[in-house]
Length: 99
Image 1 (cartoon, rainbow, N blue to C red):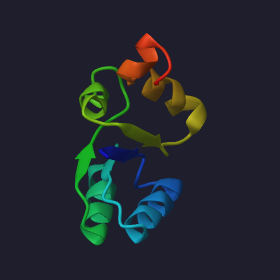
Image 2: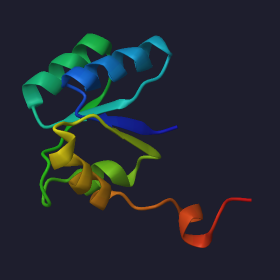
Image 3: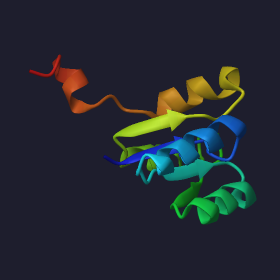
């Protein structure tokens, strides 16, 4: 599965990233701060991508190849809507429930 943690360098994101590694997962770490996200990626041995949260940021590029995006970027009142707007529903959502 291809998945990423957006906001991985924040408190909740770091917890999720560390738990993922402990579970044998290798998510892509993504966040707004190049310094913080690269340091965490180096520590955990994971790939990363710097993605600011704005309409021209490339958040859509980040989401295009993913099956799952875990949004840990806060404050959630400010980040949830922009992140959700960038996500496309999976193909099965557009044609009905999977069979």
